[in-house]
Length: 114
Image 1 (spheres, one colour):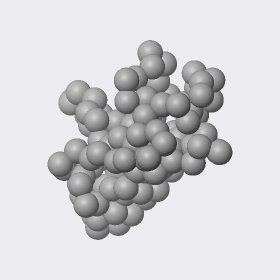
Image 2 (image 1 turned 60 degrees about the horizontal axis):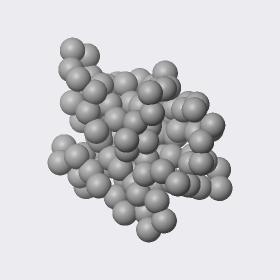
Image 3 (image 1 turned 90 degrees about the horizontal axis):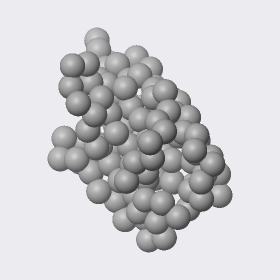
């Protein structure tokens, strides 16, 4: 299993970013996939999940209405569109299966600051 996150960066409050996660080593289309994040000094938390087939989505209350998770099963890629970013969204963002594999990627840093 290999998960490679990208797309993070420094953005001002109210700005937007689009994260990508390239997945390999497993049958991507067969797994519900999620984005997680870990802020400094805090535990990793679940941000958003997208299911297989009907692609139903679930979000943490803290990001609902601002973030959108999507997937491209042909490209084995997971996305997270993040709008109206807040300072509290600052974290390292990771992708993994909803029931996580033991292997995690390196994550991508998102910093929201003026």
